[in-house]
Image (cartoon, rainbow, N blue to C red; front, side, top):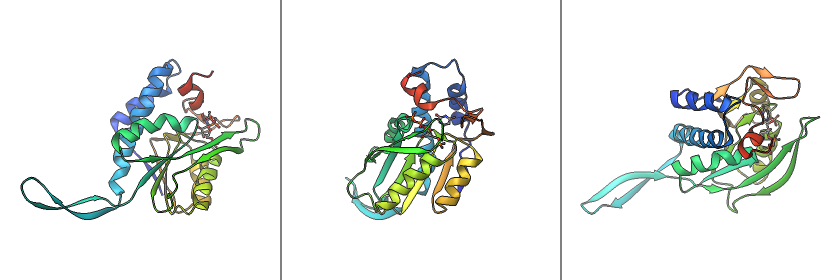
Length: 206
Ligand code: PRP
Ligand code: URA
């Protein structure tokens, strides 16, 4: 299922990121902050368990998170969302999946995978600012499913229907969260209007 998270702060910060004149520092800061805001919204659906706590005053029947939460950024650009989300959910464990998109074929290529040992029963958030053809996110989700992960959410900033449809087709059980659904892909596979090459803008590599 696709959810586009509409929130004035998210839209405002994303507008700053879209501006071609926004510097690396501000791009990174706004990406991290949007990551945190998205995590706050998405965390509403986390499973809870009943617990009994002894306060200094009395016994309290309340609830705590029932499952471990694992954040899996797709390298490189997904790294830009990690700090903001970890600020909101400090107990997250963090795995890394390295994929790059071939500039000609637009096909994803795996170069790194390091995940928490007991990830299978966790709630996993795959994070990447851009959902373009959907090839990278779909490949990352397949890698996680091969390790037995059952509950996967895909959290991206900007997506297009082409990418959304690929995930819905390849992984109908995955919930997709976006901050914005853009118009289309151009002939080079970039999102229009989008925000350009997220990895290069985060790390200042171009
Ligand atoms: C970008 C982006 C996604 C992917 C999206 O990464 O961060 O991972 O492209 O495109 P897709 O939906 O068509 O697969 P890129 O391959 O440029 O690597 P980088 O993050 O290292 O710059
Ligand atoms: N990857 C990016 O970084 N930007 C796009 O617009 C598409 C894929």
